[in-house]
Length: 288
Image (cartoon, rainbow, N blue to C red; front, side, top):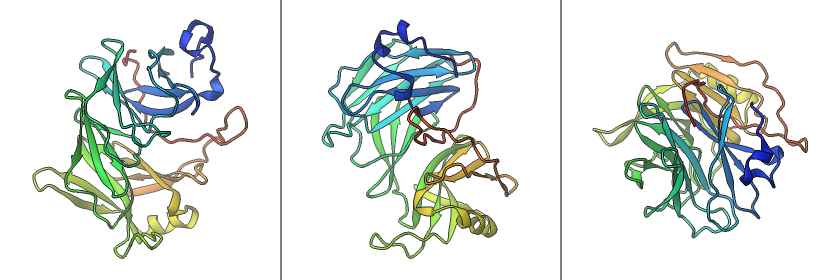
């Protein structure tokens, strides 16, 4: 990663590299957050292929981390937008702000983030999608209109630990399948499945179950309570937040899988584990 020139960035003068947190990625760009619960957040966008980075203007905000952060790029105009919503210190604060690289400024949105905790977003066909919890649902942010909408239908109850990914322009879900799961019982998925959103039918349609041998092998080493999955093109990467150095890659097209080599032990400046899987496709053309 290119080094940040801390002294040249006024917004970063009181921060150190140990405060950096990778929070989102899209179109060859990485989005970092700096700060803590007691100070306003600072965001930095970086293209590691070009070695360039940009510190976004500070946001006029009280203390507290934002509940959701996402980034979406537009390859046609070579621009990007950063979306932030909510406040972890104030559940009633569901305000949404959007940074546009074309104007180099933040804009407020009248539309508020729907209630509930949310996972990292996935960009698909010009919208930013994320999974909301309690109950499980998919919400979308329209970059052009600046509004949040809840996608119908909701995620079926039998899908455990759902994760969104984009495959060839299609919004997909991967998650465990437990046909007898209830909210009073710990999940014990019998398999892992894939679903696609059928806009015409207004339904999540199951398209595949991962091979039984894969699921058995995966569950030997991974605790499903901390299951995590990301997808990129035809490859799914399955891992676990408890010991995230074990990653299984599954090729959807030919139904093959393998364990990846053990990943490096990534820690922060205090020696604490800092490991967050995010899809990333390098691009020397993504500008800041």
